Image (cartoon, rainbow, N blue to C red):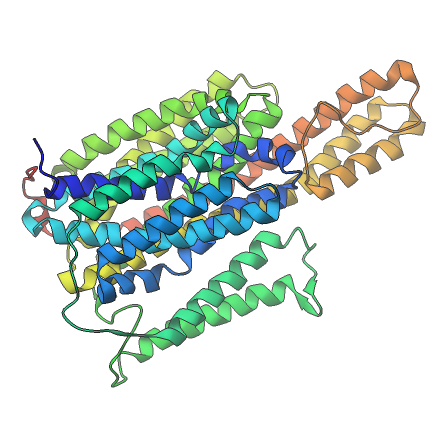
Length: 534
């Protein structure tokens, strides 16, 4: 019987916390159509329900990683877990888009407090010669949770309502809190640290301005947001602030000060850690970005329910979990770099197959092979990537390294959600009117202009894609009204499918860049020793 003080008991509590965090990064996607109607929201607002969580989970990660070094990882993790669980309840009780977005922001802050502590704890619970297996398990949890989100979300939306994609965190959070309080040791730092507050402010504001600009560009028509400030101004401001943050971190290498930089000077001395972070960012971008157009296509165009679309993704989740556990056991013999590049290639191939096959008349089961290939790819990457990133790091760097490593994934996820969401909205605004002009040729000439104008107006709002009650010209004869409605449905399905296919090209391109970055990963032979479960 496993003792409550066993490292593996603590490990399962950490995995439960991390599973919730990663699950909530993708679970919202499958519920978007339900939330559009239930909250009377537009697509941009619902996209922000997911993006604000990713943003709030990303911005403080560098700081919260260092807070664990300052106050002890257990205390920071417990505070984050309480915040996360409470915000999950708030999210489930939200009655408006604004309330839900606010709750998700708080939930993201709680997740940011927990995330770096999970990996930091693993390096403290297990000695180096026994660390490979638990790190592989941690990486496998990340991969499985990422694609399990749509499956769990679809089941909950279909059976009990979209609110339960958040309320499900309550029992898991309470149980994790009880185990964490008992099983996790309360390590305290040996020295007090003074943090780089200006650097944290620069990083936070830079990410906020950049992602807000990218996400809301189409919503504001790339024009003014408030007063003379335009979307382009915000994006440029974000890039400038992040550049200043990078310069400040480099300045610490020459400065004589007792202030600790958010990114320690020796962290990127290891080229493998830098390459692993680039790959992690690319993976976060692709896995987060691909689900939005895919789920909307399945539910809006192919007519699947939330449960149906999640059932379609179930083979992907199952195969990813199986492959992740196998890879966690054999990666030391095969090689981390080989498995990572192979996994990224398979994920890109699976996504490309889905984009190529997607058409309004596609049978849903025809998509399963592409989903399975993508699942195998995800399963191949996370465990060896996490192990490679931490292989050469000393104990005093683990806290900050965990913050940086998770920030890379979250930044990729935020930008993936924002960029793909933006491309999808832009694509709908162009593809649907284009389809309307082609299909208008089937109508009598006197109806064509009004038909195209109404379809174009609906597409530009990007507020709904409900083909059950499409807009039709008001001056139609009754005997042709049904025919026009069918044409409108075809227009939206063709236009949205083309927009979704185009938006999936971006995650594929980013995965190719991730493969190039993975060529820089080198794992020392010491980490390829046989692991034992303690």
